[in-house]
Image 1 (cartoon, helix red, strand yellow):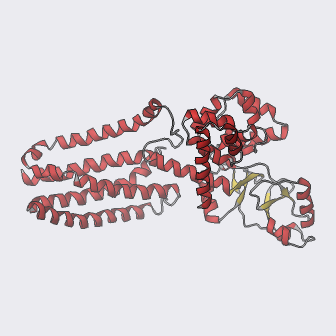
Image 2 (tube, helix red, strand yellow):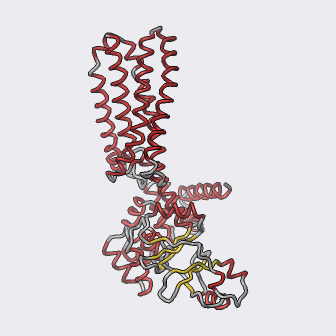
Image 3 (cartoon, one colour):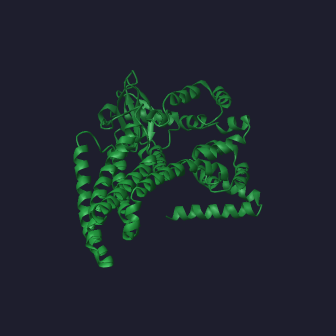
Length: 449
């Protein structure tokens, strides 16, 4: 908590320096911050001040900052940089970070950057680029240390001192055979506490299961969460070690997934720049507003079919919003739970029917309970038992359908390769509105006219 407050204080102080034109002091301060802090600060500034701040960042830090900022902010910064500056910014970057950055660079600049690398770094970057960025291969760091099982701990320690530097976040060294196939992991704690003459084969752990390079990033997160990993080896189809994934890479994926879920719920892109031009932001948000408007007209069309009932029984118009509103809330609860379960891989063919029955039973139970309450309240308010019964029956119907829709919509969208978090809410609202209005007004027309 103290670290977070310190970061906020640093950001506020830097903003004051920029506003006051104290660029020399601001330069010293900005280059003393961690690249991720500089990235967050850039994202929180309007574009004009963002350009001012970017000019203060030292060239050796620029690459690390570009990796940390959102895609849209990165694109804006890159557009204002010369090719020579971009090449300079990539110097000294780790292969996995450099690969992430190269994806967003213009093709000509990418080729120049690759040509500027020595053969070893070039091969490492190409190895990462060969995999989807949202896979274990795209997340991995290929700068790793491997040892054989038939050497002593003393030999390993001497080798590490000779290497002189190992990747940050390294908690273990991978043990491989002569074909570079994974055998086990030698934890640094065992290396430090074991007898120097002890063989690696005797102290290594074989419990750490490697992750195939083509594994989706969401599955990688699951592996780290459920196996309490700090790092994991990445292997190809022949079990040869390609690199390692560390927990800090996984935290980045978790953060991106959380932002994606939050923004998708409103039909927005998680990479959208908060300070993007007005017309650009308006155009992006217009699509789902248009979809929502269309669905609203669908619901209005249903209401229009019962205009005669509304004209003759005014109480129906007064109580009409209650049923679809309750259905929308109940459906959203089911939708959220099922969408989360899909993301966590908790739904499969064996348990889908059970989950559906459970959600339907919850919908019916809540429907009956709230139907009784609403019916009694309606009678107390309007002294109309018939209308109370109608709204109660309509509520049971709509909450049942809402539970069914909340369960099935995410699965259908997933089958159609559409993100359930992006379109599920709009589809659900349409269903609960149409069924809610149809049930309430239809029952009203049947019993009151």
